[in-house]
Structures are given as C-alpha cells and as structure tokens.
Image 1 (cartoon, one colour):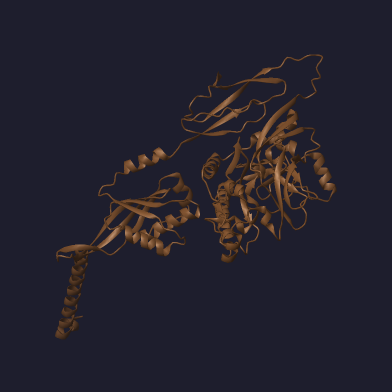
Image 2: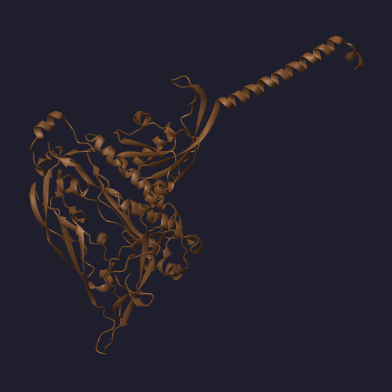
Length: 567
C-alpha cells in the first residue's frame, strides 16, 4: 500500500478516475432534471356513450416545444394510455365485463367499445364522448374507427370538451334511464301454478287468470293478509297469496270424479305443422292470423296442455300445386280433451321446388334475373323465391323440464347427475326402458326426486343475472328474429326461445345466410353464458317432427322484422 501512494503516477490516475465519476454523475443528473423540466404527464377522464356507458381514465404525455408564434409550449407525444375504467350501466356490464382496457391506447379502446357493441347487435347512430382533454379530436377518432373497424357503415362522433366534467349530471341522467325491475310472485297455496311477473318500477301487475284447486273456489289475491288492489304501483318485490273457499260436498256427488274445465289459448300460425307434403313440392301458410284454441276436459289434463303440446297440423296429402284452404287439426286424439279452433281453417300455398314462382307475384322477375341475386340482410327481394325453414334456439322439453341454478343437486342425488343433467322417470317407464336394453341406471325415479325437492338450494345471484340478460333480449328488436320469450318462476326456467329463419339455398344467398347466421350465433352465445352453470332437470321422453321448407313471403318478413320488397 505504501508503494502505491509513493508512486505519483498512481495518485494522478486515481484523481482522474474520481473526477470522471463526479463529472459523469453531474451530467446524468442534469440530463434527468432537464428531461423532467421538458416533459409532463396529465391524467384525464372520458365518458363514452353508445348504448353502454363507460368511464375511461387515461394519461397523456407532453414534451416542451415551440408553438406557431415561437413561444415555449408543450406538445402531446402520447395519444392517451388507459389507466383505469368503470362500466356504468347494465349494457356496459353485460357486453364488456370480460374485457380489460388497462394499458391500451385510447383509440384502440374506442374501437373495442364500438365493435363489441355491434357484435351484440346494439344498433347506434352516434358515439358520444365527454372529456376534459382538449387533445381528443373528432376527425381523428372517426378516421381511426373507419380504417380499423371490422364493420362497414359510418356513424357520427360527438366530442364534448368540458374543462370540469359534471359527472353527477351524467350519472343522474343515466340513472333516470335505468329502469328498476321487480319480481311479483304468486303463491297459489296448493293450486295451479301462476308464472312470476317482472314489473317495471311504478307500473302495475297484470291480473292473472284465476288459479284452480280441487275442492276449492278461488276468492281473491292477498298481500300481507289483505285483498290486493291490482291498480297498486309496484315499488318492491312482492308475493301475492291466493285465498280459497272450500266447496261444500254432497253425499250424492262422486267425489272421485274430476270436474271439467274449459280454457282458451291464442297462438300464431308458426306453431302449425305442415304434414304429408308431396315430393318436389314446397308449401307455406299464407294466412297471417292468430288462432284461438279452446280446450275442454278434465282440469288436470287441460292444465298440462301448453302451446308446444297442442300439436296442431294441416294435412296436405294428395294435394297439388295451388292455393288451398285446409282444416286445422290436432294430433292429441287420445288425451280425452275436446279441441276447437277459431278460425278453424287456414290458407296454404303449394308450389314446385323447381318452379316456386306460384308462391308470389312474378312482377319484375325478368329484370331481377338479369341482375342476378340481389337480396341482402338490409333488403330482401321476394321475387328471388327464397326457401326458408324455422330455426332458432330455445329450451322447453317435450316431456317437461326445468333449468335450475342449484348449489347442492349432486349432493342430494349422488350418482344421478351427469353433465349437469338429471333425468326423471316413472318407475313403470324405467322398467320398460330397461327391458328394451336401455341403460337406465342414472335415471332417477320421480317420487324419489319429489321427496327431496324442497331441500334444493338455489344461487339467486346467477338467477338475477340470467333474468337481467333475458329481459334485455326480450325488450330488444332484431332483424330476422320473431321475439325472445322465457318462462321463469319459483327458481325454475321452464322455457326460453326465439324463432329465426334458416336459408335453404345457402350457396345462392350466401351473404344473407351469413348475416342471419352471425346474428343467431351472437344471440346464442349471450343465452349460453347466462345459463351455463344451470342444471337441466327433465322428464324422460321425446319430441315431434320438423316442418318442410316454405317460401319467404311478405307476412313472414313482417313477422321476423325483415325489410322485404319485390323488384
């Protein structure tokens, strides 16, 4: 060590190293300080309104620069990076719940919001933006969305700059639009079941048909022991209970004989099947009317007949091309009930598959033939004689069944629940099925299920989420859809469905077929997500036949919200 310090060259070298380190550190410090002085980061807020409403928080980075007059200023170098977000209304929570916007560019997120809304068939004409950033430009947003969106068609973009956003006003306005929905349940106290009703806040309950109960006469509906006034505006969930009066019995009466009941149902012609259609022929119902079906017979049997169990049909056996007026019939000939129909006949048009022009006017067909196929999702040319069949997605077991969000089903019935399904069967039917060689080991005797049915526990959060999604679908209007309906009561989803139209000649009408297919796929995905954790409890049994293809007509276009014409 003494030798090191005694050598002047070593000392000089050490001093130089120290000076280099000090000068380098000072230089780095000055550069960093200068960068801090020449850059700044600001945080901003943006509310994006389509139908869904989303709040975005983002940051913008600036560097020092000169403005047009040569004065010191700051210029933005970052278009806006998302640092946080909030899904405000129910639409936003439904459509965007699975997405994560954090860290993405503001323009990229705006594109995601618009395209995902369109994926879910949300129609909108404008994109409304409220922000406290003066760097958000309408033209840049519109140009970016036009160049990057997977959808065609433009919409208006409105950018409302507010130095201080009035968030309370925005949220208050949205809360006014968000309708509160309440459930009204009907406790029939052992009588025939009445479906729940979903009632908007401050609206009234629709008085249901009186329930029935063997040996009793229905008196009234009560709430908390008092007669319920159906003019009462609903502001919370309620349960109405049926009040009954016991019937006087007579020794001369046969108490085992069940009283007859008469009821009526109004249905659409789409429930009527076409049967025995000849080879190389197509048929379609040309009457666009509602059919009133009156059913009379033993009350228990009458109560079991739902719309899907009417089994209505018209018989086209030995009929040739042309217009026909046919009698409506039912396949239910062995249930002991009397059926009558008003009207009791319906018009049917039969035409050849090779020359289906009898299905509609031929006016303009020559011109359309020169132009080729022109039908699109936006407008359909009926002179192209498009063959369709009913399609859609739904649940409603032919033998009866329910979807339930149960939490303990597999515990209550170990060994019987497979793939979220529980099949119920009568003891005699189980023996018969076993004699046919069918594996019935996982079928549960109905009486065993009913003995423990009251012990089933339910996930009400999942029920409420499903009802929210289904209500939105029910209250929306889509091209190509004949309404969405569902039946949910007492924790059981008994049915849900929508009707669509399937194009038969998919090669010729490829664009129209693809548009309808995409629509149905999107709807099906929403429904599947809403019911994905449910259990299917259904009765052993089977279903009926499909209908034959038929021509698309003006009546069907109106029924399925399609824009149709002839040219």
